[in-house]
Amino acid sequence: MQFSLQDKWVLITGASSGFGAAAAAAFGAQGAKLLLGARRVERLKQAAAAAKKSGASEVHFHSLDVANTASVKTFMAWAKQKIQKTNLHVLINNAGGAIGLDTVAEGKDADWEAMIQSNVLGLLRVTRAALPLIPRDDGASIINLGSVAGRTAYAGSSVYCAAKAGELQITKVLRHELFGAGIRVSTVDPGLAETEFALVRFKGDTKKATELYAGTNPLVAADIAEILVWVASRPPHVNIDEMVVKPVDQADAGKVFRRQ
Ligand SMILES: NC(=O)c1ccc[n+]([C@@H]2O[C@H](COP(=O)([O-])OP(=O)(O)OC[C@H]3O[C@@H](n4cnc5c(N)ncnc54)[C@H](OP(=O)(O)O)[C@@H]3O)[C@@H](O)[C@H]2O)c1
Image (cartoon, rainbow, N blue to C red; front, side, top):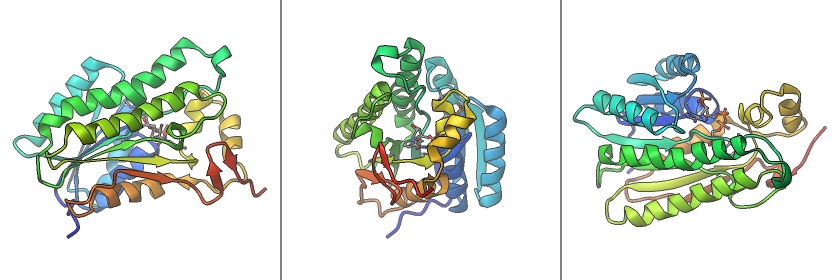
């Protein structure tokens, strides 16, 4: 039987835009109780309002920088206090992204460090702090956002590809470490999706960000949000280990058909 998300606590990192904000609305539509985190609190507030409107039974948000251990500790203490004596049934490790498209020869330390901090160390920090709140043998899920970038390589993406390859390996390691605990662990790995991802990668250059998607028919945030809900709501004995999702017009990370 499908796992009901009604009144289950769902924690989403990076809920201020893109997949995370769309996931808040999608889990909200299932009647879940939401805990949302990201650095831009004003944007979190908007995502929370939309999720409430979509049917969430409770929505709470708090600032979170997954790149900072103290911030993760504060956020998780806040989350624990919201959940009280109940449990966290779904953890969505979504915060992350790519910064810059420099070759290794031109790469910047700050960009490299920020990508490892959010996509790899952030996922680890949040998961470590969340694990004591996640119930054993009760249909709970940890779902990590990977990328096709973790499974292939393209020029200018050394650290992002490495970070998402790291995310994939951490997901697999968690499957081993949680063996017998009855906690599901999944990675959902999208291809080209139109969110604020490109704007962040190109450091606010809207022209470059728009050009990336021009003439393509990319995934949208709601496509991934729907999949995240589907993964979490499979019957408790079903673990979707890995899911790669690309637009029909994308054959590989760097191979996208342009229609205009
Ligand atoms: N769009 C794509 O093509 C694509 C494809 C494959 C995988 N992904 C992955 O999907 C995830 C979501 O990306 P998206 O496409 O939805 O991009 P997005 O719209 O830029 O959203 C990224 C989210 O991550 C949050 N975030 C980034 N660094 C953070 C930090 N240090 N602490 C807390 N939150 C942080 C951002 O919030 P704040 O800035 O407010 O903190 C934002 O909410 C990322 O892990 C990304 O790598 C994206």
